[in-house]
Image: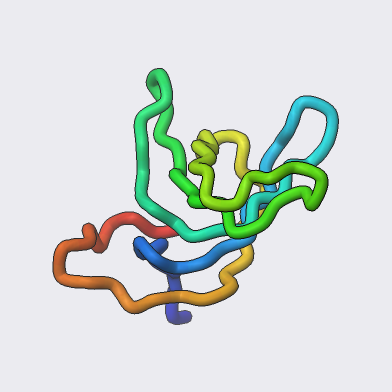
Length: 89
């Protein structure tokens, strides 16, 4: 059986579903990289569009890895030579 993985690449667009305080938080945006948040790794997303009631376009959202419920790939860009090939979902 072949194992297929997806490498999150900077500039790719994703829909990230993560645990919010009372409901699932939906973040649609462009992946900008990884960050440390306390002792945990987090995704850094530049928001494309969010809740229409909130003007969040262009803001950065940091999502701790442990809070992610699901990831949908909207538009995947190929990895560049600079990107670390061990960052798989």
